[in-house]
Length: 141
Figure 1 (cartoon, helix red, strand yellow):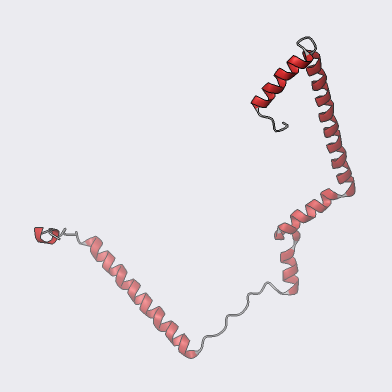
Figure 2: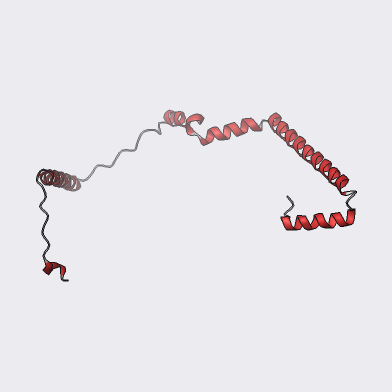
């Protein structure tokens, strides 16, 4: 609570027992408990007063507005973008004829390679694989 460990609290308890005495110690703890309870009650009351003052000042509305601003769908940013015409995607620049031809050539080559790979995979799945036999000469290295 006050940054005291168990050993420090035991030491304080022993010193209190010696200084105050065993007869007055329970009364002191009762008084200390009542004081702590009053302090906590005052802290709760202060918290409630601050919350009610914040509610009266409109802090709740400001908080809702900030949360809505963090979420574009609730805040209506999409509607603002639509109204200003900013929702359209920018046009892609056209490729030069040389680059367009290269793109088509690469696309055709990739398509052909994919078709050949699929055909090879189909052949290997259809044909049972023969395991190569290992020779002792290849293992000698």
